[in-house]
Amino acid sequence: MELFNKLRTGYFHLLRGNYRIEKRDKIILIALFIALVLISIFAKGFYSLIPLVIFISTIIIEAAMAVTLGKKLNFSITADGNGEKGQPFVFNIAVKNESVLPAGVLSIEIYIENLINGENLIVEQKIIVPPKKTKIVSCPIKSIYAGCFKAEVRKCRVSGLLDMIRRNSSLNFEGSLNYNVLPHITEMKLSQDTIAGYDMESFKYSQNKKGNDPGEIFGIREYVNGDSVKSIHWKLSGKMDKLVIREMGLPIENNILILLDKKIKSSEQAGNSVNHAANIDRLTDLFFSLSLAIAKQGIKHDIGWYDCKNKSFVIKNVDNSEAVWDAGIETLRTPHCSNMLSTVFEFLQSGCEKNYSNYLIVGDSFEDTERLMEYGTVTEFAS
Image (cartoon, rainbow, N blue to C red; front, side, top):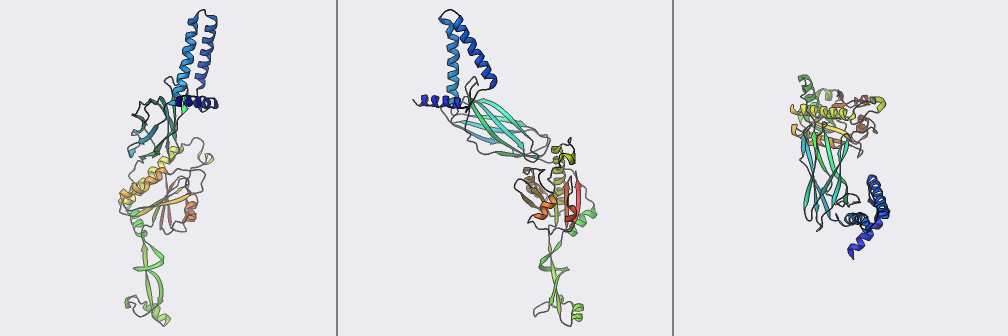
């Protein structure tokens, strides 16, 4: 009785379009049905009806399999964590059939996207999973571009052995998986003058807090009991006819900020033949290479970019060479966008601190950089 109800429910779903028969298969089935009907009419003898009965029985069995099979499927996905450009990697999708019945023919649609540039592809695999068994579907991928590759199962259709009538199966899928293709690092040789300049100028003094650095004066105030005699400003005290002291400045570290411009030029600006994915890849390589070159000199710095998806500005601290990868890997998951204002504008509008002495901008278009010059030295790095 339960099987009958499933078949009846499946039949009405089929009429309402929840089940799918490909257009080509429909034409073949209709043509074959008409041919068999004509044969049974014009041919003599009882045996002429046998092909038509077999055909109708086959369709009924196919529909019954599409209705009843593939009810208890679970999907999970695995892959190795990181790789290099041009190096093949594999997404493995495990399909577990928890039913006591075979799963039928499963047509699994896997969507794979490079989050940083939006390039994507859809892979369709067909498998048969026996009862209470797990089958692995492998999707080998190779990319010439860096980025974070996201894979997920979008659809799963169940059909009989002839794969004529398909039913969309509900997905019990354990999320999606990200695989990182890392940028190519180019050795950047920074001059000793540049390194010394970054190292010295990476100390900017706080406007809000006093410290103990005699190289910078935070402020002047009147002497009170308990103040150090060494802090008395004798020359200024003589002019003011009272004792005043110097409050020393507080140096703030990490005053280099490397900005990655994630704005994509419009077709009018870049030309219709421009390869946006290749441009994004070159910028990403340069961004990581520059940060790593500075980190190898023992210079602490910050890296930042605008996340147009979440509409927020991201700042990450880099203390050493290893931290370049830990902090920068997030930029591989953040798309480049055309519908955003300039990176500099987004940074200035954000709530991020503007107390950097050096701003290094990696990009193709350097919009609003003159506004950033009001806060520190700006250096542009083009891909």
